[in-house]
Image (cartoon, rainbow, N blue to C red):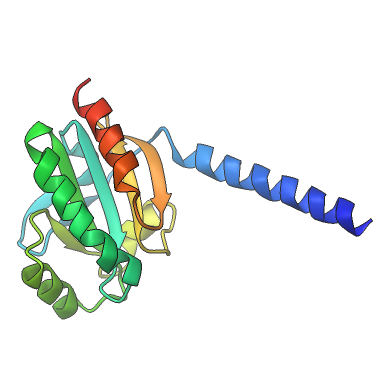
Length: 164
């Protein structure tokens, strides 16, 4: 009996995860406007590039810190082909730490402070970092990656989308 219950629980959990994954893809980016730490106004739903990565991160997140050099390298490699990256720091991240981190690490793409958590809530209440939202040229969310990005997979995806 216990084996059946565990098996049923696993099946239900798998279905729930699949439902969640399918429900977050092919949606449009929320109609929200933000301002970067350099004062640049950005309408997330109107970013006109071939591909956009919206990365939710925090300065106290080890995975985020580990992932950031890969994001910078990916941005530098693909920005001329239409890639945009927008980094959104979480509401609990102190603004001075975000500013210090971005200056020290020479982050070349826009960084936005989600001071009141509104941006994270707009993207189905993101709470875990790093979380990356992958957006195609039509403004549709094609994937939501919770945890560090696999840059080999990401680069293959970018080559496909940026050359289409």
